[in-house]
Image (tube, rainbow, N blue to C red):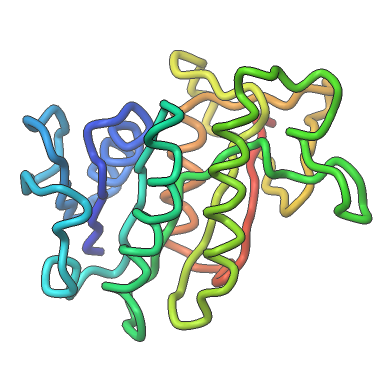
Length: 209
């Protein structure tokens, strides 16, 4: 399977690349800086400079873009829409590394994690930006996208257990009442979805088992 990972030098991207390479995928990493991945091929190119030719022929593209300042938050939407535009009408699937703040906490889907009283104020602008990008993505019927939200406690150095619970639009807890997952287990779930392709034009979520 041929996989492209965009914004490949981030920590989640690195875990996804390592998982995919270990499973025998042919991985091409795209990044604007120097390569720090173990992908078989690395292309140093800004996300916004990518063209349809750059992503042609891949089975799937992983969008691992992140922006962390007030000035750059709008790039969550513009970068995602750019990727949608260059993949529009193709068979190549787009899998997006999402956030947990936009998950719903009630069955009516009227309240998100980011709306709850305990959600930190400092994270609200980022959550809002990522939620806006997701809403724009939902409008794209011309792209075979899947948006994958991690659990609320997303741990960079967390344990790789090899097991996870798959959810949908709502925040889910494991049997210990936790909403937690490591980057490594998230990567397993991401690569499983790349292999299976079961959730086209859907948002899914994952939590440690």
